[in-house]
Image (cartoon, rainbow over all chains, first blue to last red; front, side, top):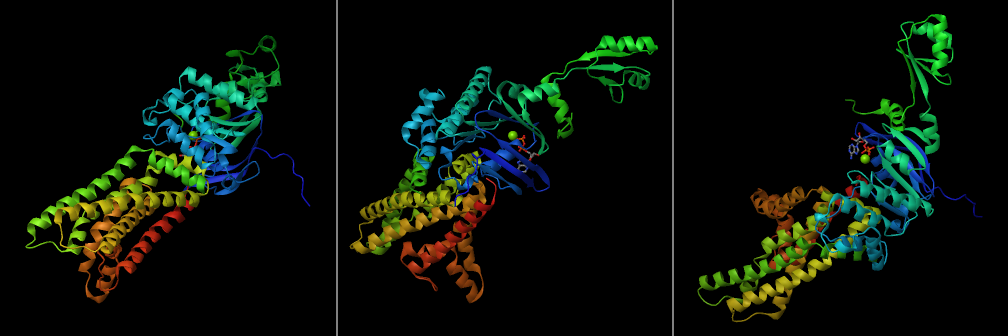
Length: 303
Length: 246
Ligand SMILES: Nc1ncnc2c1ncn2[C@@H]1O[C@H](COP(=O)(O)OP(=O)(O)O)[C@@H](O)[C@H]1O
Ligand SMILES: [Mg+2]
């Protein structure tokens, strides 16, 4: 008797772990990536984003845990490119081959017809340079070629590792629009970045990691709502007394952080009590600041 | 599997350096045949005997063995150097399928090219040396033996390339194993040393080209021993390719 399972999650990692010698690149990551939306995979450099993606794609062997694509280990997909398209490093191509031949070789391996190569060359705008050797391509062109390769098999799942790194504004806008369009078609788009600002504009959902560990798995809206909450920063030579007076504050080493009470109300209270104030500031953190705050403990290198 | 073979064939023919290396191998074989022919002819007292003429015609094989080995190395090491191997493995995640397709395509291309090169070299050599008589069967056997030997050398390179992954390292290893160490093994002492030398890589492999036997092996058994060396390199490479991160 067949057991009915719900629709498979596009990508699922369970306790995924990777050690390189003494370095722990990924430490027990569990998350799901759902179709129909752009999922941003966010974390500072060295957080383990690329390593996680390589394990999902069957390139690196996990030291522990598992990564499944549509319920199956990647290595067991018969024509993987028809299910998953990925761009890891745009410059990882043989420079001596033409763009068309590069794509033809990839297409052939998955039984994808040659006409599809011409189609994707059109989609990414490389049809005019299809005969040129890719060694002479600019980073932007190489990026487009990588995306063409990812789109070859018309896959339901797309994985991009820092696709906008080093691109000019035109290229960035193009990739952003493409990812939104792919998600709107119901596909799964999983894209990494180390920049919050980038993800805020592209992603619907966020998976934030630091030092290989999960920091947050949340919708972008929720993340923005939670992290851009405003507060009032109060500093005073008699901070403890101020804190006692205001009651709702969160006491930090050199300041008090108050939410839900206006600066005017705080100022009035402290004036009545005769407590001197050094600072009374209304703070509305940016998204970037919230992200920095969230990941500051997991930064590998601090300047 | 057919799909993957087609893919590897597209990869091989779409890189100019591969095509030129193959053309270079043919030219090299023909050029050496001409040189050897001219020098044999001027040095010989009388007419050059048939089997010596055929053997001399294939003297380019010494260097062609290295160009084919280098080509075999590059077939995989170039993918590791550029990290394009990741693109290949995303398309064909079963690593041994990918490696098998490379082996098949390389073997087929190499056999054809090296057979043409060897037959051409013999034709050039014979035309210059004009031996009084040659056995047709001798010519066919030598051309085939040379093509088999050169292809095995290329596969040795492919195996070492898979094992070592770095172009320079793999080519240096190939030169050491195929060219430098074999003559040195003749210095090994005793009967045991002589046997080791007889079985050592190209010392055994070349017997099929010269159609001679050494103390231990004949032409075909020698070639079989050489193939065993190739297989060891290839299997070690295959095991590591499966196990390592790409
Ligand atoms: N092949 C490797 N060998 C050794 N260490 C590695 C390797 N790949 C990644 N690392 C280490 O693992 C950690 C995570 O790297 P990576 O996945 O590239 O992070 P990210 O993509 O988030 O910048 C880093 O400390 C990095 O140095
Ligand atoms: Mg990375």
